Length: 454
Image 1: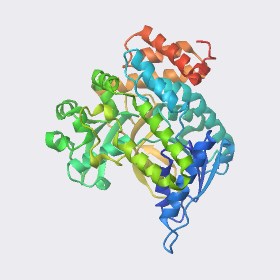
Image 2 (image 1 turned 180 degrees about the vertical axis):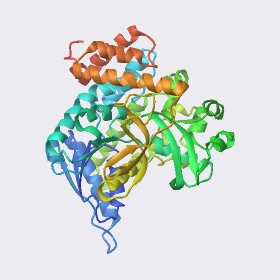
Image 3 (image 1 turned 135 degrees about the vertical axis):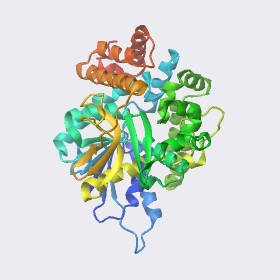
Image 4 (image 1 turned 120 degrees about the vertical axis):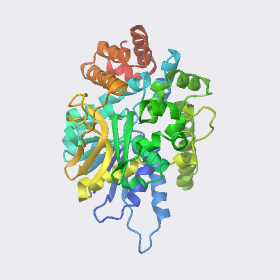
């Protein structure tokens, strides 16, 4: 099997390759094509992966590691691919820092996927994502497309307009949430069934069944058990009990907006600025010491994971040890490939077309929910309806996403302004207009969407 990995020079690529190295099935990925527009980053990541494979060893019990090719030619990467995995970042980390700072300059949340920053990220990414979808349709029409590019729900929905349901969105947040909830009540995650539903970075864990018993009421009734989870500490047991569900960690930005803004403003740098500096140092170090590429990556990755969403933890200096490495999006990607290509059915939390599985949201909207996956792809499991503020918030954010997709396709500033203005984290139509103008000035790829004349 051939896997085309788009964004192949990106920092998290070794997580995917590491999962492939651990796969021992006879029908496994044996060829990985790394595609990126940055040849220098591609070369560095190629060295990291080569050293990873070498460390695994070549003994009699070791399988041949997947072969690696690197290219800046998209069609070459796609040709013959059975699966395409996308984790691109249009505008790079420089664009991310602008996403954050423009919002903060207007007194709003500065975060890359949530709020105005996420909309700016979507504006510049949607045209590229749809172009990629068109090339996949032309060069590898039978390939399955696994999307990890943010904003994942919005990008997946836009690409489905070209490739249909062969596009599947994944995220590491829901599986991490589920694992932590299972650990809090002392049951193995592998034997749990969950009721999780919402949108990407905007979902709720409402049920946790083990041996036929829903343990969510037990978890909600115990402040001590809730505090053993990242989400329980983040939101506070009282709030979790009030809404009757464990929220995805990104809902902190909706439930504690002022606190999040104050924390980000109080820091010496935004998350994007930290990553820009850290990753530039990493790639510089690899160029200077290529034989140490793998060890340099491991050190940088450990620091990155420990500081993830640090602004939400207040005075807690680092992430709890038990929460590190519990996301596992690379495992989700491998499970999808195994289910589709070799008949290993799986139940996963994915971003897929709603198709009536989540009442109250549009049929063609991409939702994040529990799915069964087999050779025919994913099928969402019918969920109990979202109600109250959960339904209201999901409906409003989905409407904003659909407005932004239409704005890009129609090159309509009016629709883009409406998307910003109607987002629950933007508080004025005039501010929405100012935001769009500022993003056009600061980020060339955003300005290009509307012809650069804003």
